[in-house]
Image (cartoon, rainbow, N blue to C red):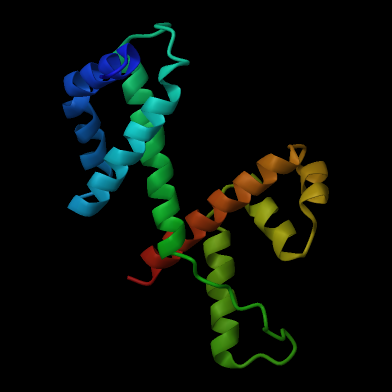
Length: 164
């Protein structure tokens, strides 16, 4: 016999299954990934069901959780696929033409960033600690990490675009 909570949750999922799948299809075309995202959303909804206090509509609550879960899934997938190491074994005093060209390309891409992002990535490339970068820029250490992650993603995308 199912408990009342389980029955209520099951009814909500039946009613909003289409909404959840719509979010899943926005983030993938692969059936296996869609099913993975759907299952992850269901888990997040079940975990958060006790905390749902009807402060918003059920539809809003489901969309919020579904979108956040799908976005996080997409970010994880992209991190796993695009982990491109940057070669830091370059001696600037003994450069071959190929190495110099790579450095020039890197700096050309960095120069496309906005001023703050450019400053953060350059401090990072100089080996400055997150604490010091935070102090210099005037943001929290956690925000430095987040910004660096986003900057790296931007650089990867710009490098891909420039190589086409």
